[in-house]
Image 1 (cartoon, rainbow, N blue to C red):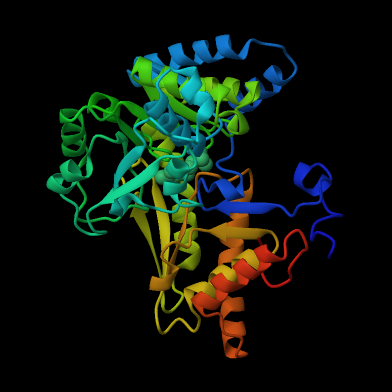
Image 2 (spheres, rainbow, N blue to C red):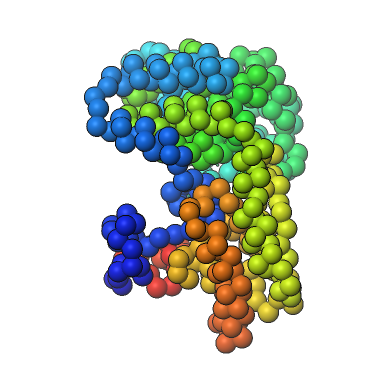
Length: 414
Ligand SMILES: *Cc1c(COP(=O)(O)O)cnc(C)c1O
């Protein structure tokens, strides 16, 4: 395997000391790139807790009080991540606090074992969300079509075996024709079905609780800036049942004391922040990068409001037919350059990519501004030289690189 590109340059950087190439993460909060850069208070809390003994059940009760105060829910706990939180919430909805049932999962014999979800919410955020449900032994019962789901279909999907309903709030969800949350919750509650809401990347900590969610789940390592963890909040009996999965299927997805401590501190710091100051701070790099791209033929750059209404913008770079290269050529030049710069590519098929400022480290804003024009020039050169990067081919290269892991791959970063 080749030596890491920066192995001799910067021994103060832990990534370099461990043999990994530094990466500038402009995907925002993508878990596979380490999530968001944690806030200093959370880093300190995790470090301090690592060296101490503590009763985890008591620490989780402390977390419950903080989560209740901040979200308005009755109780809460910290899970290993949102994915784990979804699993544990679904499992708890099936077993309640019966230890025999908790220890028997994923065998659901004798339990209500179905979870309803609208088809437009069956997203892949790194893996399919339905797998979080199926891991518990529950059966996924989708209703509606990708672009058309109705309250009548939801009511029809609920039956005597329904343990819970899952509602996902995410830019990944189908944009049109979904049952809105208030209606979804009303139909479920009319039939006694609890509603679990996946809000992993959503800044709103209170609105869904007020609107009738029985359990909400947020990631601690996304917008909150904690260590890797998930924040579960909701009605006390359901939260307790989900928490008790730590003695069942939750064991292989346990959170450490450092993750709990960092999540509590991150929650408290997050709610104390002034949103408008942060918004302005996050906009500065976007304006800088937009200026760096100005005047390049065929390339447009515009501020893009967050699709689910979170309080920040991103920069969308659109690459037109007269640009002399494609969006994927530029993305490829950015990712194989030094340092590797990773952007959001959800809409790369439509000829655009998106730059998210939330995980920028010190000095990286300037580095990115410098690299942007270079990357466009490199992309044009590779295109002129006939090295084509079709979108599907680019995706296939990444899949092939993964199939060769842990061996390095010159073709594509992991
Ligand atoms: C990121 C994400 C998750 C998973 O969050 P983790 O905390 O990384 O497990 C689940 N659902 C949605 C919609 C997400 O965006």
